[in-house]
Length: 190
Length: 190
Image (tube, each protein chain N blue to C red):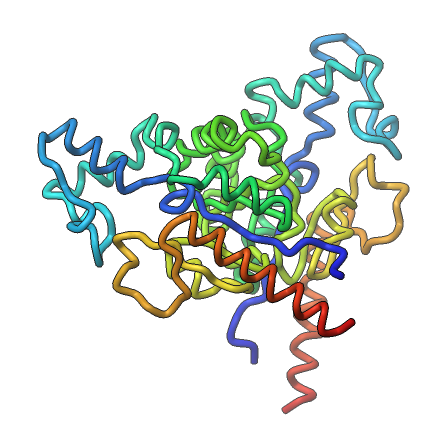
């Protein structure tokens, strides 16, 4: 048996929090134009919108990160994963410094069971070392020291060099399987 | 020759920023009692003060982290180290969430040459992986994956299980020596 839990780093934007739907909703409210999720496939999020500058500006607008919708089932699955893994929330917040406190408050609201000790706000993630990283960006997954797991998003959906999960239910299945494999490996050593 | 620079993680409070002197000055202003650096030896900072609660409260007071004095020569030595090493600022900010933006602004003021990509605000530092860590706390140094370097502070001065530097000038000398050793190791391979 392992004494220490394996570690999972989980990204916020696009993984725990639904950035796409927030952009779509804010843009619709401001411009009356409804952009589809399909339009966001294969390019950076703002490029799907006629006025890209507006969408880039949202990222620096107070309230944008504080009010992001939670991804379906993220809360339940993260809570369950915590029984078996050490969970760290690792988010690239430094590019948008106004988001620092908003992201902290967002986590307090939706994931109050995650300790402040397990929250990391960073620039690049290259010095983060965990056994697994769940992220939607190749710039993080490519250089990850553990096992990279790509959370599906429009902007990454045409990239196929990482193991992909589409939903939090699929994250649950994946880690259930990892635990089963782990147990049978231990059993075969007994 | 190595292609990639070695990485150094540098702590903020007690290493880049002088927390002791800020506590002493704020306490003197509020209570008219001047506590000496010597009184802070061998115990957590607040315990050197007659009213410990007041000092703990400073850590949650707006402006405390934003106005910390810079350690002597920290700016110059960090700037020089950046020529030879990849520098990351790694600070435990999550325990005092009000400090998040203040710490960001403080770095922008005093270390504007450090990119947002190289700033990490975290809870515990156990998943941070760099070749060196300069820190004043054993709770970080003990579990560091690279080479731990203890920056002297009153609270750690009775602990002797880590290599100690007392000033930023000593940090400079240490890394000059590391680079010399590195060069002679490379030369002996030629």
